[in-house]
Amino acid sequence: MNALLESIRLDSAECDDFGRLVDLTGHVGKPPRALGGERLLVPVDGSRASLNALRVAVRTVGRRPGATLHLLNAQVAIGADARSDTLVDQGLACTASARALLDAAGIPYLLHLVAGPAGTAIVEHAREKDVSEIVMGADGIGGVVCAILGSVAADVIARVDQPVTLVRAGIHPDELAGAGEDWLFACDGSAAALRAARHLAGRLATAPRARRGRVHVLNVRMPGGLLPALPGRVDAAMRRQAAQECAAALDCLETAGIACLFHVESGDPVAQILRFAEDAGCGRIVMGTSGPGSLDSLIAGAVSNGVLRRAPLPVTLVK
Image (cartoon, rainbow, N blue to C red; front, side, top):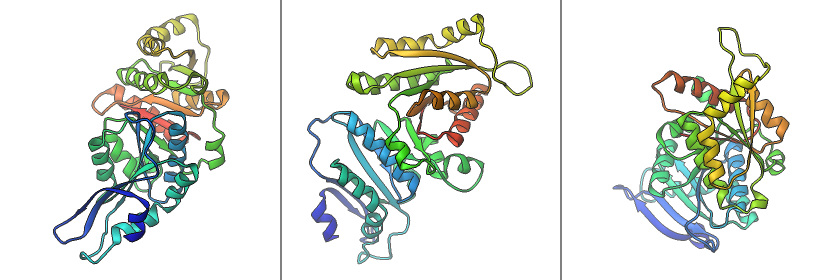
């Protein structure tokens, strides 16, 4: 405990009925010069995926004056009685690499160590601190959903309203460091896509123009019929339909002063999104995702899951 007290400015510490420390929050490093900006929540557990997520968040904070970073670690087992410092000991061990990365970058942050299930801890912190975005590792084990997203990530996406950026463990740190600043916004004309456009506009509107990167808006037309969607020719009628479907999202970006390039492709949406992102050298994919209950949400979910499973770059989902 002493080592922790020396390195952070404690905001709060809470014990349960048995005297065990179950919640500790404090600031590390100098406070940011400007307050009131974005708050990025990065859950870390020492895994490669969570460290990759932190690297993405560090790049974001470096580009956004006033942005603050919240580092969270949840521990399920915390010891038998008040004499145990399990939460601090295990929490510091699991966040050691993450804290070293932030210290090396000179980035101040809020450290939150909490006892309980990781998914619940992330959701509650996001709500209580009103974070702007959650950036987290996407990998996990278990069933089909867990294999795609990771069990904790899937739980968080289902329960929060904030955008969630998912980063896979398989992305090499050098690839993240050298990633381009261009964005790929996969737009299908849905209400979720419009919310994604608003999120992207808000992210970029206050950023210095030189650091915004280009925004590519991609609409993928799926040929009708029962056969698998194959890449095909995009005719004038398809382009007009795509422009109509994406008009509200494009207007949102234009109103915010965000210049964008509009593209229309035909074929399998997952394959086309991934191919375009690679060809254009984009550093992140942004897309809307809907809640359960409709055919559109099932299709959107299948596309976002497919992109997440195969994307070699961070993917931001906006509900």
